[in-house]
Image 1 (tube, rainbow, N blue to C red):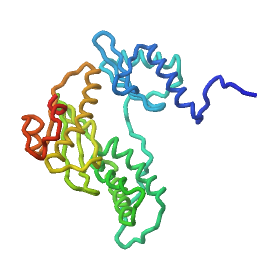
Image 2: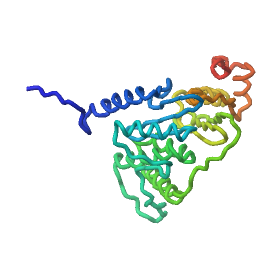
Image 3: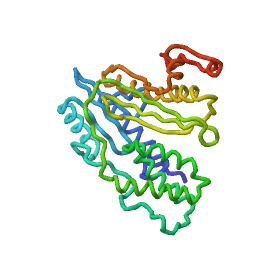
Image 4: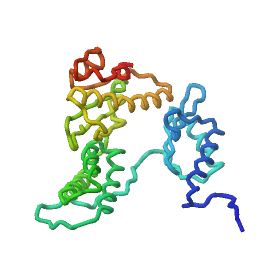
Length: 286
């Protein structure tokens, strides 16, 4: 006998897909349009007002220049769904409680398996990616040793947890600055396995909105190539951010920031020499 469910059940494999199909159709009926770059980011425009809605699983965030528009959206949602509403973002929920402390040099080292190491690192990664750019670089380095970790890696991870515990009250401050989207990039050369480490931070109105640090997939032949490839790879995040910002009806000027003069000359002035002739400079210049 084969039985057919009339609706999806929580924790079933199909539950997430069914929920997304239902909610996306609900938003479309209300006049929301999914952005091209990120399908979980919706835009609603009425007259001269704009409302942006981002959904992650069963949590969402609404930003609008009209309180009346937000109130109408809330009323329409409550006609269909049972929702919990908050007028402001008063806290950020994470999996990591602020209870760990920095290990002393005399403390015994407790052996753990890779699963526990990866579990703690995964919880910290959520914080580093969402609200703490100061931890992004170290989290990336520790993640590169998840499979072949040593006692030194666990000590470094424990120290990072202690740093987070001591700085738990620190917060990113939103302050209005110049209406410019700026991309700052930097890169090392010949790191682990001869691959360079690269990092970027994207700011809008003087405030960081996106950041990251990772090890490159290729081996760069020079410091100039390392800096240029970092600029090249980071610009894709700039293009995605500009797409979201344009959906909000804004068209701010952009800036690319790089501290390597040779890489700047290659990307903007189309200057090259033997070590960089293989690089395609068109993408960065556009």
